[in-house]
Length: 283
Length: 246
Image (cartoon, rainbow over all chains, first blue to last red; front, side, top):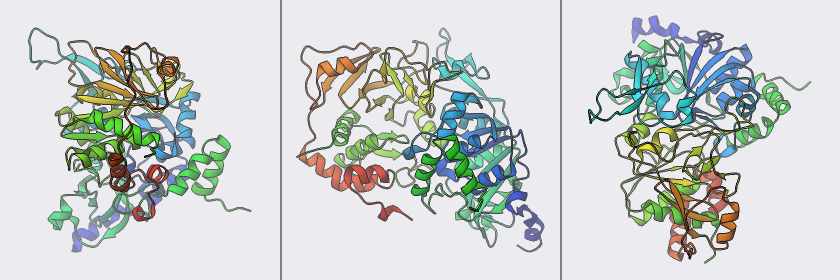
């Protein structure tokens, strides 16, 4: 590793320093529950008081979006669904949408994948089948329907939806490990690579540092996001808690049930924030 | 043999799945997941079953988009969708009740429905709550339409709707009552359905699951299910969670 390694180790920072690129008003893309949700980072962002985020949850979210919304960090949310899964609806999300305190850009999962892929390829849009006749399309003036120039039958129109590229300011996720060159091992969670390719900057939290270069081992290299794309890394052990880090640890079901109960009311949610995010001690 | 409602519904859905190559099941769908795993046990490994959210029960290696790419390629034969509201045209609403800009109730969102409903040949609609609140004349928000104009590319759509009271089939833009589950009546179905539907003069009763099916479900399927749906597997089949915690 030698000089090259030490030259790049400035990528590894404290959690708060690593999160500096996530500024008020930025467009932030985060992954779905099974792909490594950066919950320690999310709590740190709430403590810092980040505001007016344009949150893109690829393609869905659970506790992370609910917490950020409840804590007043989100201005617009673009996603296909927010839910606590087996633990019920996402209460702060529901309250914010019915109360009109966030702007909602409803999507469908493959539309978000495709729009990020457009940015990944550096093209202005991506076509997608489906959507025509849905109210999702009706409420998305930024999505266009064209007659496919490659339709099978030249006498018949073939309408198809075009989705503009989503180019986030920052991609943020949690993964198992990184090395000191900034390479991050994402395994089979390939949408993390798409997020990083599409975004201007990528911030990752990891369970631990890997000694050596992840790209030296062909087996690990296939699941590695090269450090070339990465802006900063912070170590956050159990950084997805209480959500799972697949193949490493399961969700903390008891805590998620507790969250669902507490977040059902604004008062209960405030208490949750005090206890588990601001970590205020009882007097 | 006594059986639970969940077991009857899974058995009904397993029959609807039929002989296909690949069944995919979305998030928060424990009963369809039970049915898909049951179909695979009966078919000695066929169909492929993909349970979203489960690394063990999916073969995906290309991230979250692979399911949708697969569907676009025609490689998914069966999928399941539901709705806060489902209407008589097969339209589903996973978004909100009331005006979209100022909703009275907000649901999680449309997930992949606005793509999968168009390109998966057999979409099975599943909603346990069968009431005039859920089965409505017209949905407040169309997450995905039951049918499309002839010039819209569409290789898939709904084939059936399974509820806690009955089984409807769907063809030519309308539902038809196929059978009523044991303990329920046609009158009750009419009374609790907000949309019009076809029905034969004599509506059969949904057959109860056979003892072989129940044994297969309880002994072979339930432990597999517990990895993805620990709470459900514990509640319905009494399968413990300990073996799956890491």
